[in-house]
Length: 441
Image (cartoon, rainbow, N blue to C red):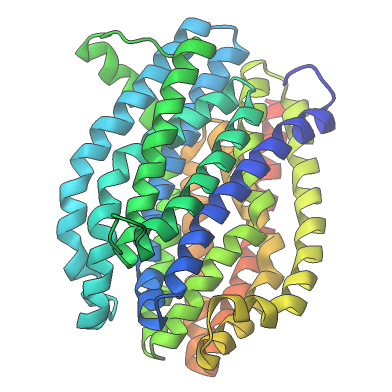
């Protein structure tokens, strides 16, 4: 990562991570598609759960960002022992914090989703799904930390294969637990949660085996409470702001969902589908946001500032060209996509409307995502947090709400798209100014 040609390194690390990211999105699209076969109310319930589930996942992403930054910088500085210590600290934190988070998460279901506008019938379905899904919080946190260690070691191809295997496993388990099979009863929407948690359990077992036996990065030992707390403090200096920055996304999505609830279950159901499709359209951005930070952190640790700046510039140029091309595909294919996820005309109309507006701004959203991940990799998590706050609460949400007041559902997403554009231009200017200062200091 600190010697080979920049373009080759980014391609070699981004491709398998992107494949893994595709698998993650297919994982959740499978849940969405199978649940959509149960009916619009179940699909709307799943749409309501999206901000809560993505918040937990983004908490894991934040932990992964901190883990990757600390482990990769230690490896770049040729300090394998320190890298092992941070790996242990990250895994331990994932399990302990995840277990502590389960109970308050379960208690919050009725109040939070009631405030978001869910009807009593929809709230019952939400409780069925999240009541089991939240039991997997420790597993998803450790999965994020463990795969971040793999990327930090330069083994991104294995993560891609692991996530593909997980997606396949989830797709097999979904219909079994949702619709029933043999002696297994039909759990309906709860079955999707059961399939997800069982899949996470399997990935956790593999992560333990690989990090302990293959990478030699994880060993079972007790470093002492003081040492563990010290490592957690260093880890959380990056992970906590990164997690908060990522968790702003579902908060903003929750505001949009609550606004759409006034337009009925069809609007919420359609938006829930689009949010999962959005992740697929932004899949390369997601992959590069995971593969670029280890590259930047290792070169940061080796004081190769010109090289990391070049990597960032090449990544943003590529993302801009790719996302504009993907927008044309999505806009043309919107009716076909809508038909795959709902037989109801009202839901399909929402999906088509959003897919022809919001993805036009995904290139600029990609600029924001890569800039934020680069700030974290440069051990500047406060800047990454400010980046997310600016995007959502200065640009995205205010302009979306303004658009909704002026033009209903269409106006809401036009405003959101303009917010993405303005945020992308401003924040990309900031990250390039920041990295230029590293060279001249």
